[in-house]
Image (cartoon, rainbow, N blue to C red; front, side, top):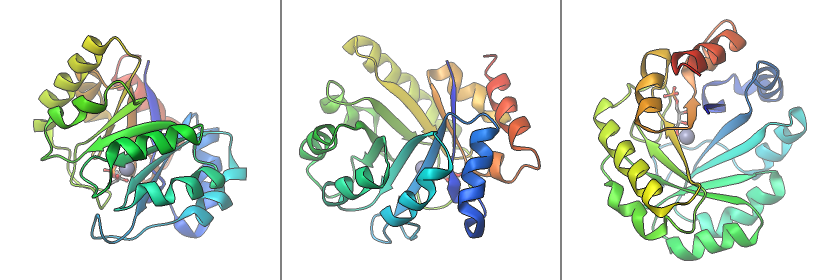
Length: 218
Ligand code: DX5
Ligand code: ZN
């Protein structure tokens, strides 16, 4: 199984609703929504009101990636806006266990994410409580960066951890995913491919999504 989650960070923000509708029509099952607060990362993107405004434009699964300092405080607003999965960072200055519980109490799927310099071990204490691990293959903050191939062993390590747990936890990978890198992360155990530039900068969204899936041989 491989799921493509196009990151709207690379879309035309002046036509956000149309862009979301277009990738959904082109076959995207998920939409990746990057939320940045200017504290956790040196960039600012969008908040719950924007998520709410794009919600009616597709039935895609809303995959919200919070790169913010206080995911506990904002989780409920994103749920109300239409988020279905909320992923936040283990490096955020928050109580990770409490934040996981809060997101689950809201009736949402919950993911935790690790930046490139954070080891796989950081995920271990939470593996029994989460639905997804998001492995960053670029430093979070900006789209269009080069894929870090040295993250592949970490993906394999997390895959092993998940297999040992016997739980159904997905691995999602974010940053520099293209048909050239998709197969590498897929082989390492990834199920969900976040793709910003490689989808939204393409002429043909359907071809771009199909090329990612085909690169994985699935
Ligand atoms: C970076 C974001 C990514 C970004 C990926 O902080 O989390 O989702 O949009 O963009 P590409 O696919 O262009 O590397
Ligand atoms: Zn992201």
